[in-house]
Amino acid sequence: MTVGKLKLRVTDIQCEAKGILLLELRDEKKQALPSFTAGSHIEIYLANGLTRHYSLLNSSVETDRYVFSVSLDPNSQGGSAFIHQKIKLGDMLSVSTPRNHFELVDAEQYCFIAGGIGITPILSMIHWCIAHQKKWTLYYSVRNRQRAAFYESLCALNQEKNIHFHFNDEQADLLNLQKIVQDNAENTHIYCCGPNPLMLALKEASADIAERVHFEWFNAPKLNTSENKTELAISDFTVKLAKSGRDILVKPEQSILEAIEAQGVEVPFSCRAGICGACECRVLRGEPEHLDMVLSDTEKQGNQRMMICVSRSRSPVLELDL
Image (tube, rainbow, N blue to C red):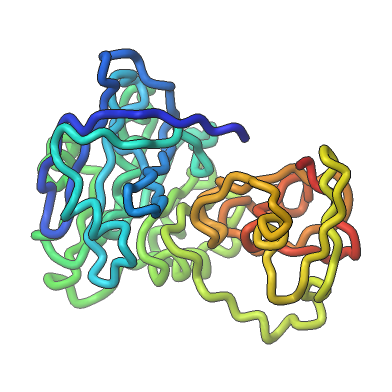
């Protein structure tokens, strides 16, 4: 997927909740921005050399602005802290055009589950549902009311009482994911974004309806591979780059991306954790070992695409459209 770069001006900065900033970006010449769909994200190329991706939270019918939020991570490695401390009103930011790996499928109704800052892509989806008169329900779990981003905005949208807030410091039990899954009809698709414990718990609770449950991961969860070591990708393998005709050996300690970079080949990337989709490549031949959190189970079984920053190969040779 080709991703362009834009230079946009920061036209608004607000404190949305405790530790959460809202930023608005517009074209300096008031030109229309590339369109996006609900669930999309953009990548921000920071002046300190880091790249971070953030979900767009405004309505996808808006063509004049991109709006996103940044939660200050106490263990920030330079991304969220830089934005909170260095980005000012009027600054110019380099950003990618929008891409979407969390897109709404066509369904009769939707159930949204958000935890903390995971509400951001869900907001854009809610706007879409309202505009298209789709039935929807939101379960929003957050540590406390002070940290509930967009609380007032959500309350204003709660005309049909289909938004359920869960404040952890006010309720004894965690969000009952098992009940939420059981209560949803077969024509409902579930979309979840939030901390990994919430997402992993939902993944377990919804195993029987996995084809109707969709996730947007902020961090790659640690996967336990000790039980299926015999099925893991082979140690060494060769990647063939179809467009250049080059053969590149990928060693056990390397990712495909690292091996390609070591040979001086430039390819798009961002997270290096298999969660953003920036390094997606088309597979022409061979069998990938999919280790990303972007592709659905069906897409992984199709073996037509892969994320080269984390995924490896089950076959001795893997040919990519690079």
